[in-house]
Length: 267
Image (cartoon, rainbow, N blue to C red; front, side, top):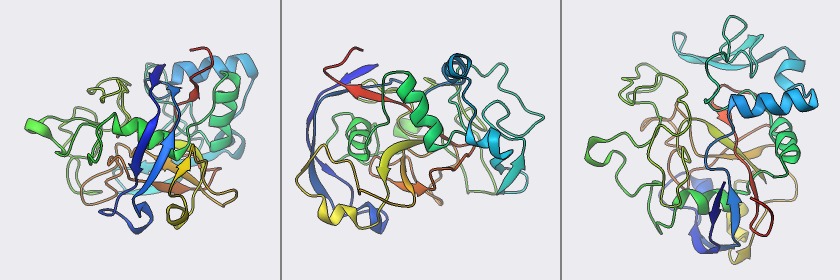
């Protein structure tokens, strides 16, 4: 894990989607955060120790983006062990982020590990990496010097992905440069669960908050970081202030998580 300093920052953006603003001042205290997204290998240890069955396994299906069909489809037999469906496997993918995990699945892992899921404020503070006002985790240029800084969709979504980052789908963790705090894949690769309920207008009443935890209730959870499906013409979720939302029982092949714990606790 990486120990992040606390501080006060301008959260949100007025240059993105309406629910990403307004910009407001927020303070977060120091905390530890997983350097990478939780991997298949780590999640397998949790399952072996607890016997946990994910919501996708219990439901018998999950959401998969099918490149050939250029759309999301509910695929029978898709789950964390079979990311693209029953004929696929996580064998040989130990170091890839686990996907097809619901909010409750992620929270259960975090509790077992003695951690918790990050708040939206913690995630954005972490993603910024000490770069106040920057649009991306690495600065203001998407591809500085032509370099791929995150696993994203290169081309016009969903018709064509040039694959110039070397990964047509999910990449193993840690294949791209860290941000200013040493965090890996904090942008791109897979969306990540946060603990906050999502509200389009929450930011309008959140100014001056200290360690905000989001609305008290809601129907969808906020997710952060973007994924391998994000492109310039689609969601641009790899921006540090980008936010999206999905039902807490969602299982998708571009959605995972990482954990945090208080700075006062053990590493």
